[in-house]
Length: 132
Image 1: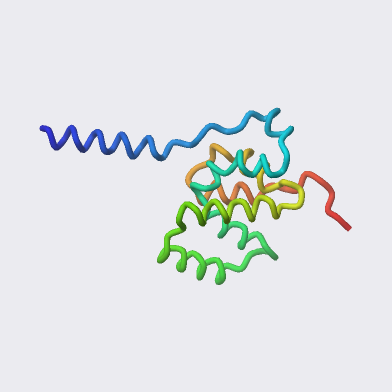
Image 2: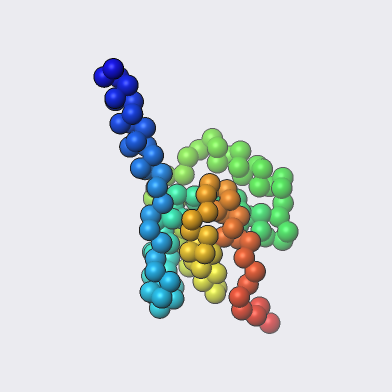
């Protein structure tokens, strides 16, 4: 019976690890600087870094399924470590000219699993007119 209790404790601990962090409050988020928005969205984006990279690549120029597939295969062979995930998120976030990446993360915060979350982040129509 003791091994069963240990197993239940382990399963409970693992389930708690998969819980999503709390989303930033909308008003506070809107008032943040671009850098603060990136930091506020880091806990959510970090959990899905690889899928966010794949969705971003797929959103460029109508997507390239062959290239996305090759990257997915490569990512499956080498894990993305925590420090790398943070750097990848910050680059994508600060590289977003109109903070659409950070807004997409907040908009899709509760979407799971990571693949659906990432597709949601990159599927939003732009909220401002494109630059000319």
